[in-house]
Figure 1: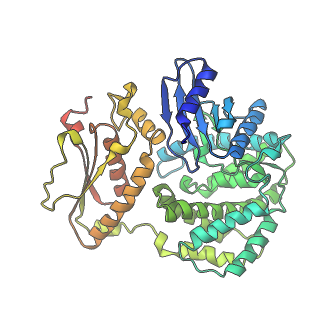
Figure 2: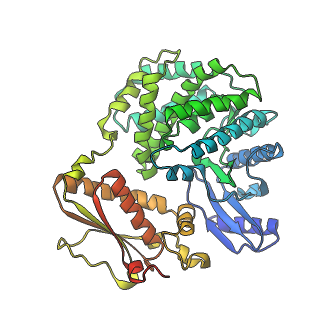
Figure 3: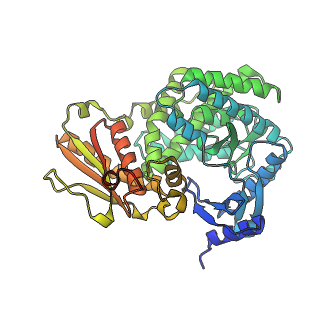
Length: 481
């Protein structure tokens, strides 16, 4: 009999809060199999989590309790029902460090650097203070980032990126390099808590202060790994001089908490930068090249930019005669090159993008070519069902936050981008002059408006084509709802 996850979490919330859950909203799916809900009552709110892996649930709950008792920036655990794979944690809001990155534009402003300084300070405290006295028997799936953990990452990289990307390699020679690289990395101090996936999506910002989530994969390991994960996150696109500044700032904090040999730390740091880069490519291969998820596909060029910098600037004290050529081949692969926008400059292609309500029929086509793509957004969780959003549109901040955090809009659009990109590139090659892409929903107010805006932005950024954007129902109403 299927498990009613929503009901389990609702009951847990009401037993803890002593009040009815008036709002139970599913959060957007993450890269894991965990399911999250935001639950709100008259006076209390919490994030409910259902995870199918009991050991993973136990790791997060026990780590959180330990860290919270040490006044580290993690959510408080309110209540647990681990027999039903459920627990409630503190609601830290909807603002992530990643959302700050999305707003930064092409530069990296000083106020964002200052936010990162706060983050690396808190990271050092979590790793060093949090690791003291921590029961590593609760770790899942390994108690330490040992050689076996590294080999798992290496093999994911080999089978899901190198093979999918058709990068040639000698399997036996590459395996030998993996073992040599792992042995080298384990010479660093590996006695502290390692977050494992320390990146901007797992850093919540509340009242200007960073809080950390999703450390259930944490284990004992080297300090360098998490810092490398943060500073070399692909889409952060962080300038190297800022990375260097933040590295020094991190070390200033860490030195106050434990003994640090700065030069030795930096030597191994760049080795951990490379293994994190390799782990990232493995994830991008599986989630992007295999599952065709847009976020991961669009991150690959940024990861390659990081890899190029490593190849040109890092000299490791370990010989990797097979791995290094494979890494160089990735940076030289034409399949990951960004689109040549000069093709758009010489094209007369005009793309019409719009939103509409199915209540008033499909959009009229005036080009004479019979129309183009029409995508139905009615399968996406509708914010218009809830009173706070009824008068808003897909351009209002609260509705955007809802669609990003309480629906599968990202995955929906990711698949659509893949389909549309094929058409746009073909039309540019064949000198076509028009393409239409429309999104429909019930009222033409929330989901379709947001989706059309995202598509227009995607086409301009990736291809530089001319885009005409029209929100039919909203223009008719003068955006008054």
